[in-house]
Image: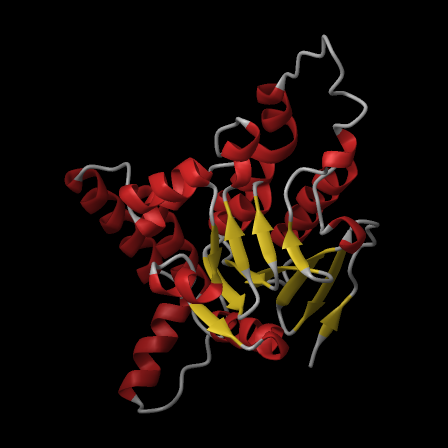
Length: 270
């Protein structure tokens, strides 16, 4: 196992080993709820993983019993008094949206290892990741409607793409809990494993991605993300451009030569 020096944070844990960055949401006493410091440090950890030449894949998980319960309601107690007018749009643009955008826009694949409840913005965070491995104890809840709000942090973008419009409407407008078994059935997660095996499974998946051509994965991620907005003609143009780019990589050459020589390819991410 190879390890690299990682920066220190207070509300998230950050470690790098075998080209995989593991970012652990670490406010277990409040079920890894979002506050200002947590939001800033999570974004900082994602940026660090994106910048690091050592990192080829990223795992997001939670410490304790929860993945993330969303907004820290403790922060709201002192605000919600008669006459208070919340400016939640500003809060989203400042704290949550940059995190979602960073996950989506970076080239490196991001895996959510969902260990427990993912509620509200915590659910949105899991949905924004490229792949989701869930513990048998994981649950997903779009709780926003229960406090008179709409699903945010891109839940309205990703949820219908994963489970379909009708199911997304149901989950968002009823706020009901989805357990791990149902999440797998409806396509919300890619895999469900026993709780004790969650990080082993997530690291195995990350290790598989790390062993593959990094530029090809990055280009594939970009194309799939764009496919819901592009027309057929636009997607064909984008594919041709991406294929031209991928064809010029050392990994493509290595893959072809390894196939011809009937050996396992040695991809380097270049």
